Length: 188
Image 1 (tube, rainbow, N blue to C red):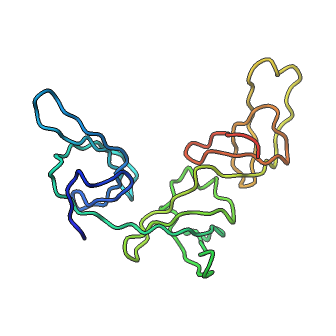
Image 2 (tube, helix red, strand yellow):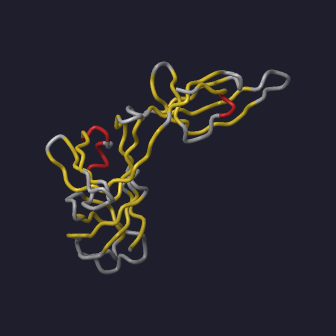
């Protein structure tokens, strides 16, 4: 793997730090008075997902890890794995469910596009899109007079999960949900 100076590494690139693969999440240069400049860097662990802050000198050498990002289509869940299909070659692959955060499983809709991150030929992570469009399969009727305040209710979506939505959403509506926290983002 290529070695490079810390000042040349950009946000979104992966590096080898303490014999583990980390993605640079955020970085900024800091200078304190007449002291030396250093880089304050937030690193996100590729497999565990935890974020740590680390301080580096601009001249520190790090190993850059080459990540390959390929788009796949989610088909279905098969026990302990998700079955994904490459949209051009129709090649299918099984990915362990642990590669997708547990709270995001309820938002996986068939035929949605996912990004698969690979180091050489080894799959290391599956990235969900920012938002997902789903259909509301069940939503209680809004009570009359609840228009003065922003009232929310629990609605069931096509995957069986429950999501908080505004009172005007009805059964059959297509809505957009932010994958990161499962928050309602609007109608489609």
